[in-house]
Length: 94
Ligand SMILES: [Zn+2]
Image 1 (cartoon, rainbow, N blue to C red):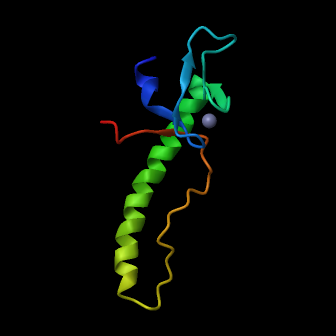
Image 2: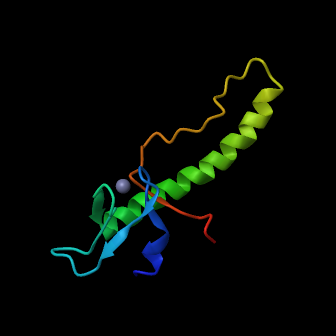
């Protein structure tokens, strides 16, 4: 588990989360900088949401390209996740 969580990061600090597998009542993960944390279950769930949004972001970029050719389509190129995720997964380290 601690290996898996190494790529999990605090969205605010872009800092790798620290895992506390022995925490009570549930294993936790938290940002060593700002202390933002949650149970590992919740962190994993939020990471999953974030990954889905990254997929959506890929689609958004496709739409942005398409929108460039049309004045009638208004599209904001900068993708802003609506959920404001606290935790993200660092996929660039792979
Ligand atoms: Zn943080």
